Length: 244
Image (cartoon, rainbow, N blue to C red; front, side, top):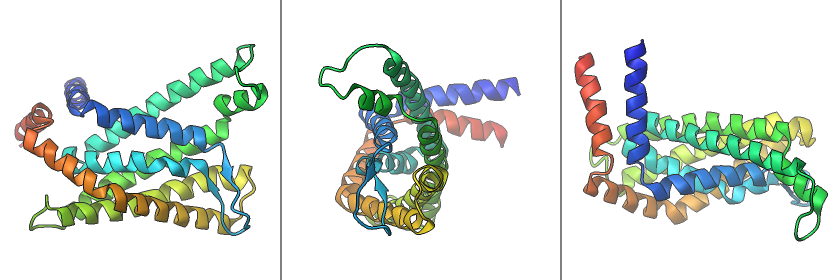
């Protein structure tokens, strides 16, 4: 058991050192921004549609997850997702501490800004739980769809299909889980609003994927050509061979 944990830890460290820094930064910033912006609801002027502002940046996290799932696999993508969640929780703690420090913001609105950055426990709980569940769903659906392409699994058609399907399912799960945990019980949303929020969020994410999917494909293609993560893949393969 102890040896297995050491091997898993070594594999995880190799993964962290293998993921391109820019991708990791974009991923973490997207998750942090989602959590912060989820505190604000969007006024849609209709009782049948409700959204929060987290939707404007959440596509970045799902784009990064799809790229990681394609190149490194669903397990690795999920591990990086948990790293992003951990960083977000640490920053939330620091933001909360800052909100309790006596003083004034340089541009006023002190109480409102303290409440925004201090956050509320149920928004943090909801966004964290929703993202973890949706990350697992997104990454493994992405992998499953990719396995269905026996011919040209690395082609753009396969990439777009696995990205669109996993993003649609993952985003619906993310939005609906958050809506149930937070919006339904704390913001007073109806079940219709929860469903329409999840569907609308999913459609917005798919639109963003239509814009950025080709970029994600090109990045993954470049990663493969450059042998990004070779040391990580070699170690994973060696562990498989030992088990066999």
